[in-house]
Figure 1 (cartoon, rainbow, N blue to C red):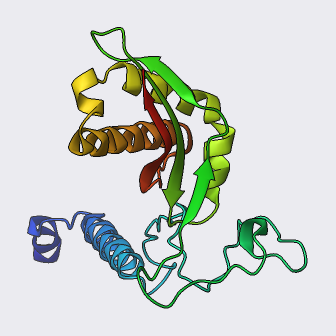
Figure 2 (figure 1 turned 180 degrees about the horizontal axis):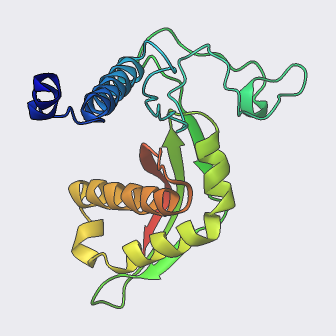
Length: 200
């Protein structure tokens, strides 16, 4: 009978204690595995890694003398770029070629706080590809309006001196670039030149 009492006095083992250890171990292994996979993906070893967004610069590019401008109109046989026969670039000066856009009509406006009028005919230059010229043609109406506003905001004293005319050139250049930037995302005009300049 002592055998029975010995058996009864021993505590019974709980079932499932080993199962809990197995579950915790499995969860820990899954966590370690997932962390390892995440680390390999982040490092680019598997899954292609992180993808950086590379922004392509699609703005008009500077064109070197002698280089072909992919946006320039196709010249007729025997004519250079823009239709000028025998056009060549010199070896000196700027390494970039310059293209001019001539506004067909004059700009006439009153000057600021006076009865005087200013009438100018202008051209704009760019060293960038021909898209800038195409954009000036496309947005000529908006550019004309911006230039007339800039001229109307010019005092008469400003247009008499060479320094004042140079400041007006810079303001007109900025006005064109502002219109182009608002409409196309890029300006590209380097300078404005006066073909005629009459104060009345």
